[in-house]
Length: 294
Image 1 (spheres, rainbow, N blue to C red):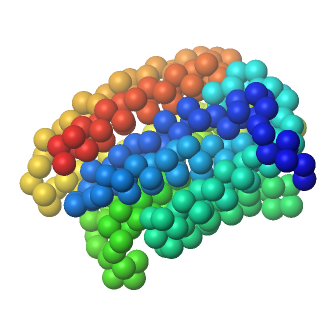
Image 2 (image 1 turned 60 degrees about the vertical axis):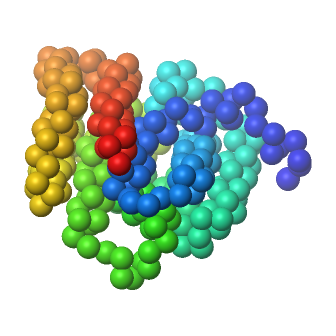
């Protein structure tokens, strides 16, 4: 490997898709809001590791092996990938792991596991992405509950083996359901290209109508879990605010569902990105409000 291959090209930087980290930002905010007596420096370091190193590195690694020619998340016209994307994504993961040790070794190990799973998801020799249920479960767990719990234990330094309780488990399940609900919708416009690579995604398996029904069911499950989460705390206003913040998501979801039933052409990149950004903004508002309260 030449040193110059560690210098990312404009194409490589585009494929890292830093803005995509916004979609996972609510998970971090939720963990911060529910953790007491945090160190600001440690919280900022964890934020930097996840959102500026681990997540973009995963995006880049995935893009390198996908080599998409049609629209992908945040890139309507993805540029051709080059070797700098591969090497720089690995370099970012190495830096993420090293910085993770300054949080604690448990958190660093979590960052390492996340990187390994992203490789198993994308690399041709394993390509978990081509298996609909396995790929869904990987994203469901590792971008949801896993990130929440890793952030929580990284902030608190609690013992992993004794620090669990029902409240913590439900919080992680909420994150997984909300992430899982959006996952098939990000695949709905890529059926043609995914088939051409031999990837049988969950959205392909479910079909257009099934994708919306599955996502809607997971979102409702997340809604029920949030109700159960706040019920013991006697703070119904927190649940009511969630309903208000997510009302725009539900309305656009129903509108888009009806349009797709009318014509599959509406299962487009543009509509998928509108759904993603609307969801991310509404969730950031809600969980950001929880952080402000704490």
